[in-house]
Image 1 (tube, rainbow, N blue to C red):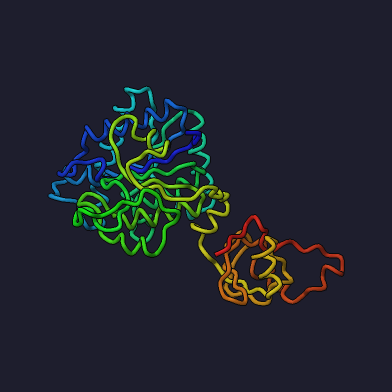
Image 2 (cartoon, rainbow, N blue to C red):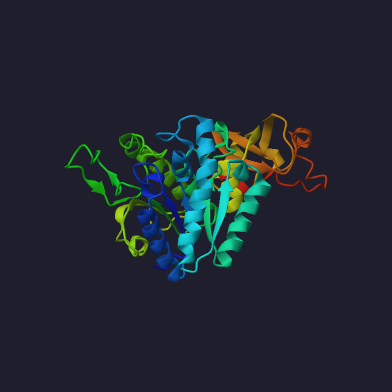
Length: 363
C-alpha cells in the first residue's frame, strides 16, 4: 500500500449500459473507489473511455458508429456528457476533476510531451484529479493511440506511476475464453506478456468499446517496458481499488518486482519520436553503446543516411543491424564533415558526443 501515484483506466463496457448510455450505478461505484484511494493519500489519474459510447444514442445511432465521422460526432456530444457526470459525482466527495484530451501529436512533439507532463504534475501536486481521454473529435486514423488501453499505458509511463489498473468487464486473463469454456482457468499473476498470451487473447471487445483482451495485453507490455506494473480485472464496491493495490484484486497482475523506470526523454525517443535518419557505427562503437553504456562519438560512425538536424532522432545500426535510437547533437551536414576524421582530437579540438548516453535507447 506504499504506492502513491496510480493510473486507472475505465473502459466503455465498465462505464455504460447495454444501450450505450452512461450507467449511473457503475459510475457511482467507480467514483466511490477512486475517492477511497485519494482519501488514503494516493495521486490518481483516470483514463476514461465512454465519450463515443455516451454520445451515439444522442445522435440517433442504434449502436456504436463505425465510420470516423460518426465516432467523432458521437465523441463531440458524449465527452461533454461524460465529464459532466464525473464532475457532479466527484463534487460529492470534494474532489475537483480536470479534463485533458490528448492526441498522438501531444506525444510526438517533444515540447508538447514535456508540457503534458508539467501540466499533469501540477494538477496532481494541487490535489486535482486529471481525467484523460483521447481527443476523438479531432483525431485522424493514423494519429490515434488505437484505444485507451494504450493511452493509459503511455500516461502511466509519462507520470512514472507505481501501478496501472485497467478495469474491464472480464476479471483477468484466462487460458481460454471463460464465456465459452466453463473450465477455463485464470492467471492470477504473469511475469511478462509473451507471444503465447497475445495469441490466446484474440477477439474484439464489447459493442460499446474498441479493445479486447489483446489490446490490454499489448498496453500492459508497453507499461512494463516503462517500469509500471499492471493489473487487469474488475470488481465492485468502494474498496475495490484499495484491494487491488493490496494484491487482492479480482483479476490478473502482470509484472515482476524491481521494474526499472524510464526517463521521460528516453520514453519520448523510444515510443513517440519521428525517425529522421540513420547512423551506421563500427564494432567498437556498437560495443561501447550496448555493453558499456557510453555515448556515441563521431569516430565510431562510418556512414549516415538521410537529412536531419540537431535534436532530431535517428536509428543506429551496428554490425548486427538496428541496435537503437538516439537524439543527435549534430545535423547531417556537420556530421558528414566529421566522418573518418579521427585525428581532430589530437589537433586539440574537443568533439561533442553525437548521441549522449542519456539520449539513447536500445532496441
